[in-house]
View (tube, rainbow, N blue to C red):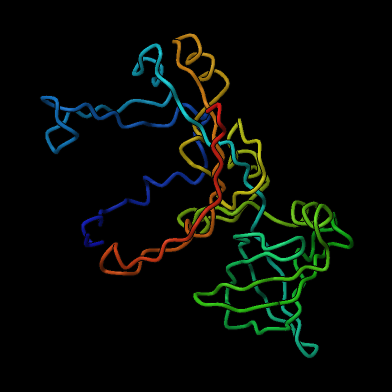
Length: 256
């Protein structure tokens, strides 16, 4: 399928830089089929809010939620080579082992295998405010592999201390991350660490909405899908069949 078939105009005024308060006040487009068909241009469209969801479902319906938890996977710092420094930033994408992570680097052209990077400078909450790593491998399209000086749980704590939430590009290009993002860019039911971006549809649910769904007789079930590197990659091909998809880790329990 040609990718230009998906082109549309998105006014900047329609891009929310912060979530609605409360979350379930966000707008929701309701599409009702006409004459038993799937959605078409002549479908019945309704502009409602996420809080209206219980009234749109029937008792006995089931909702499935992704309980992944986003880690603060965006790191910034400096590359150190022969006593010279250059600013660099990374988005962690996939853990390789106890002390190594794959990441997207910006700008990747400043990095070579063997370079030392010092991350989180200026944040005094992690061992004098730094987290050091070595560029272990350099791949294509800006991807690198970092070997951190820490490993396992100690590394997890360090990343949590110096990292920031990896906001979507359409938000990150318009504002700097802040402390609010740690809570607002996480679902209320996030449970298992591992995602490098949020499963954004789930961000609109609130305890009050869950209570209303329970009262309506709507069951909840959970799976885990750690959103990975592919979510950051634009589609640059003219045909969807030529776009390289990244894999992601997921788990569905026998009960679910």
